[in-house]
Image (cartoon, rainbow, N blue to C red; front, top):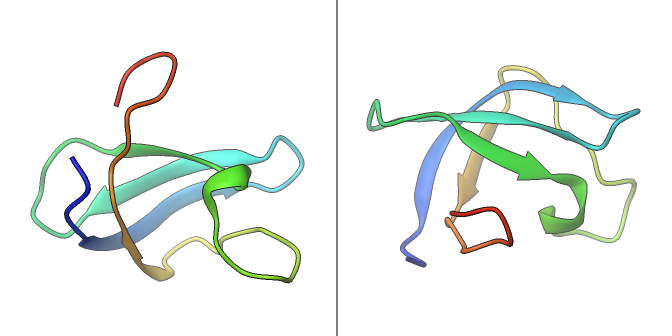
Length: 62
């Protein structure tokens, strides 16, 4: 599954490097790890931030 989706950051713990995104389509919240954040700066997300993402298969599931 690699279709682009949009959503809002539900929460993100920069110290632990992970959080969750609430997809705009109302589907189940999506886990996000700092290593998946694109960009050259410090990789973090802010609560309520609009994001575009795709769901990828990880070691523990999508």
